[in-house]
Amino acid sequence: GAGVSQSPSNKVTEKGKDVELRCDPISGHTALYWYRQRLGQGLEFLIYFQGNSAPDKSGLPSDRFSAERTGESVSTLTIQRTQQEDSAVYLCASSPDSGTLSYEQYFGPGTRLTVT
Amino acid sequence: SQKIEQNSEALNIQEGKTATLTCNYTNYSPAYLQWYRQDPGRGPVFLLLIRENEKEKRKERLKVTFDTTLKQSLFHITASQPADSATYLCARPSGAGSYQLTFGKGTKLSVIP
Picture (cartoon, rainbow over the protein chains, first blue to last red):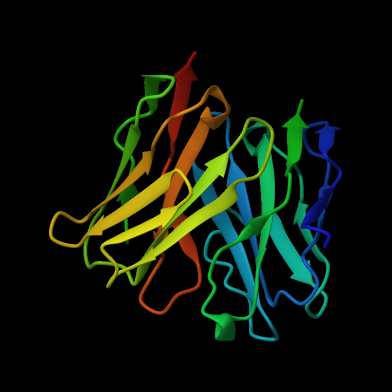
């Protein structure tokens, strides 16, 4: 079946502009995660959605970052007034229902964001 | 916070040898640990999950161990091949009962022909 997809694959934007990144999780996966990966660095957790529960936003670095998810499908990550330090690869992952006791995450290819 | 460390940023190994990567964690032992592979320009791909009560897990040429005394997991690739060259990440739950993961920074493995 189809894996996690993300769009766009690459985004170049000017400092101060807003950007919106999209993630389509695997159908039926209730959990969805956003991560940021700076060049040569590890994955930095941003936000987590689980079903209809309130999202865990504890990883968002500033109030310029926000994310939404429609039910158990598409999610968008929005970065307002982008800064050069926002340049990174933004990865989305989804995970099946916890009832399967299968906690592995399935990652998309990422969106490479460059802020000039 | 629950930390996880992969001490080696890079590991070079000759083709055919066994590669061993190390992952150390702090505080309490997690219910499980996971290992992922990440190729350049791609998202991580899940490889193996090992639970706290499992000493060892195998999948083809891969073997993972979980030592709660040493607070350590070892990831082995036997008969390594150049195609095994990638960055390998270990991950643990961010908290008790949490489905979120905290990832290590990864070890970049290069298998030299």
